[in-house]
Image (cartoon, rainbow, N blue to C red; front, top):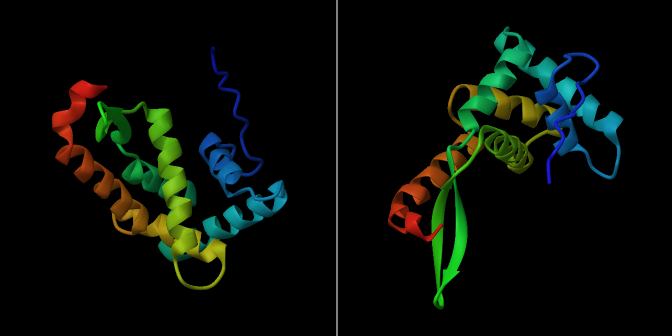
Length: 150
């Protein structure tokens, strides 16, 4: 089964990464609200850093993207956490998910300002999403002995 890579681009930045992020923000089919949240977050990023917000977004996603993921395998009555290398698209999807999860967990104002702050922190290699990636890599390193169970 082949997957088509026909992800459309957003109207302002003309970027697929932005569109992927909007589709993950999307709740209850309200895409215009998701665009509004992301564009407000990007304005906050630009105001805070004085850099192009698309550059900060790409850098944040690159910092958060994991190389490996943990998969649970059950072998002979025992459950093992097996580290598995992942492709860049799956890593990017995980990074976006972790960025949004970390921004939703942040205390504070609205989702747009929290997302903007999380993007800036991730671009600086800190924040909740980066901590999640480091934790995943740590668990993968600890369970490296079970790679043969793939």
